[in-house]
Amino acid sequence: MNRVRLALAMALLVLCAPALAREPRAIVWELPQPIDLLAPAGVRAPLPGEGRGPARVWLAASSGADFYLAADGNLPGDVDVVSLPLRPEALFPAVFRERAAVAACGIGTAVFVDLDSLALAVPDFLDYTTENGLGDVLWQAEDLNGDGLTDLWGTNGQSLYAALQRPDGSFALLSRDLPPPAAPTPRLRELWRVSARRVAHELSSRSSVEHRIWADDLTGDGRRELVVLSEDGHGRRADILGVDFAGFSLVRALDLASLGTLGDAFLLTPEAGCALAAARLRLVLPGEEDALAPTYVLELFSLSQTAAAHTPHLRLSSSFLPGFMPLVQSPDGWHWISLIPRLPATPGETARLAAEGTIGMTLRASRLDRHGARHDTSVAQVRLSLGTNPRTMRGGFTSAVAGHPLLARLDADGVLTMIAPQGERSVKVGPGAALVGAADVNGDGQGEVLVLKPGARRVEALAWRP
Image (tube, rainbow, N blue to C red):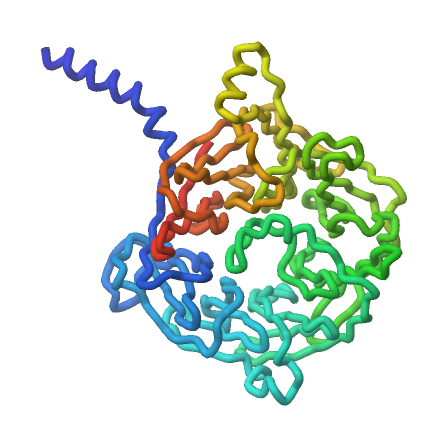
């Protein structure tokens, strides 16, 4: 009899295992106040004097000028708090004086927060902001010269600044004048802004109104170059700038006139070892170019040493979905997600979809490579509301998980659905929650979806595994 019961229990466990595996694993942080910004702060073992225990996953967050550092699984009162001398516009994981830190950056100033001691350090060149004309510079944090220390860069529209960190925590400030463009450079990322404080996946860091400026390693040498994209009303040009203690150096000047002035232009390296390419991303509305529905169009242009080719060598399209970005960067390269409307197979399916107010979509992923694009053989089926207004922004974004692109969507009922070509997973997170990002928060090489719960005091990182 006991053997029969054991066999039944084992059978039940086997039957339930797939359902259990579909439940995303959550990493949870509790904050004492509603937060404005957050950034993963890495994994850290207990410090001497904190006792023994497993390594904890840390989250940095801010509410106004209050900075919080919380470990996963914490109680709301078990949070380190320090007051900042600014209301940050963004938080960046950083290394300052060869120690783990977070850079809190804003307009006119920035501060580094040591993650062990919570000591604050304002960069020396910013101690006299009003005297050196840096009061209107929006700062960001990157390792520009590849030495492992976090540097700062920013712009006020007229000049480009970079501040390289030395091992002792001092900075070397560099500046370069920017030519005044004849027209603002369009940025398609404004189309998928979730709110003023929360932005879904964007192609670049913030830039000034006049120029599109971002940092990226475009040469594969481990250093992040600064790219200045300008428009003169007839076409575009891009200057790739290297930064070291000797100053700015022009790595490459590119004429992008063949891309025209429509859409968002940028540069990318499709995969490691690939030649640099120019890209144009456009949103084509119904009636334009025979489009029946809003459609994202990505075009890649080959580059000579000085200019982009006259015609694109690759063109990919995807149905527009509010709040989502079909182009995804992962450590191993770039991916494109195509959403393709699927015609109903039978009259019965047509009637059912009409009654539900939904449309069927096929999700297919493609990886950009030196030959153009390599299409994933797996596809997923998605059903979306027919009443979606393409100009209404909703929470949602794409990310890269386990080397595959992932589309996450959060509906009005608070159900989070994570969709990859290999399938989908859904979990109830509750009405009023918001998608705020995707990151590898625990250092396992995979991506987690970050959800801010109602009240903005609880953050959950949900992992999906194919």
